[in-house]
Image 1 (cartoon, rainbow, N blue to C red):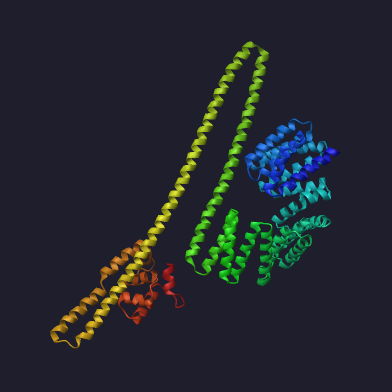
Image 2: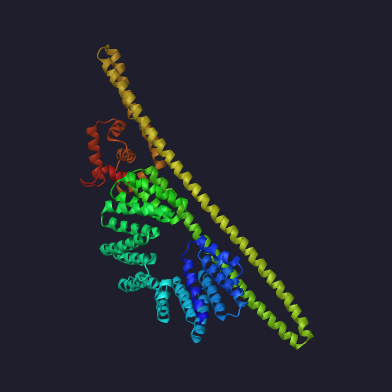
Length: 594
């Protein structure tokens, strides 16, 4: 009876550790290992360490699970040996070996049920549930968790493991909100007997359930209860997340002033416990709120504070969330420079996130390959030992033959290792090649963007020079007109000749040809697309469209074409008809988006 409860305490101890801060739980378990403890206690600690590292470093999780199995094998505690095997099954869940995980759990469940070992059965059911959740078979996972409650209908167990919350989460994922609410209220009833932060947590989960259904009044009721519970027990962490949740509901109800107060309280509480993740999240919510209020200065201020915090704690998900908010804000205020800056940073961090995921997947794959190789090697070793034993019994001649077989097998294994080593080298080279190709592609893209930007500046500069030239020639023409009246007849003829040359200079087609060549370098398909879609357009129409595409003002276009504003308006109306635009449609906007 005593052993049964000791093993239950082990299960609960592991669950509590999984919700502690990573550094605290690792330090705590390492301190236990360093002290003088029994073999059983050491095996239990190794199991706990494996469970801690599974989500952080799968290789270490595997190593501790292997050590736990070896240590448990040295004891006479059969239940502990089975718990160690379940620990390895949990590792298999993370390295793409679900079949092995399920096989071990079902084997141990069968043994545990025969011997009426409830704790072992529950742990096997728990890992099976997690495994099937990973495979996307959530209905099967739910069945295993419901079976756990049937086996162990004990309030202490339900409170410590949070099983009701797991079941509620699975129902909520399937949008079965009534069933989810039923189990959360059961969990609340159990936890309300002891006033602590866990009660507030369940109240917030109920609030989250209503929030998902957009039932904001009910969500606010439960968030407020959780908030008040946190105030009663003076739990700052509870106050931090509940005040943030209330702020979100107020935000959705457009009660902005109240929402601001709750977000600010959440930030202050997060600062007290140095929880930068919650602090950054609240800054992000404040930024979104101020953006909706169109108070862009404050929105930018809070978003940038949250962005710095996210970078400080290296939370890539939060960085991406806040950079998206900043891009939206700068787009609202038409600040293209800062918009592109944060778009660029967002893209970089998205690449970082992808790389992190790829590294984790590669590590899991590498460990999976190693485990498969070890499994195969152990099987081959077992076969070889059987062959040795068989030939030893037959005769001395059999031993000699066996020696030859062992030698050949050794050569074969060595060749296999060489092949695996060469394969690893090839995979490393391929990875380097892919990384280099990505870097070259990025450099080429940057070069092309810089080239296009330079050509656009050249085109704008050329347009300015043409306008300045025309303005200068017009000034000369006006001055000559002033002088013409006081001159003799022969000099008037010379001046009129100069007038004609000046007008020709103003309307020189060479200037347009040069401008057109540079324009086509920036917008290579613009004129082709216009001619394809509107075949009746003339060269003058294309010229006018090009000036509109460059966003020149009406005055600048009139000066470039050496016509009056009235004539320009007529040209616009004619072009609008050729483009088959209605009166309500804007010609300039149409061409800029063309």
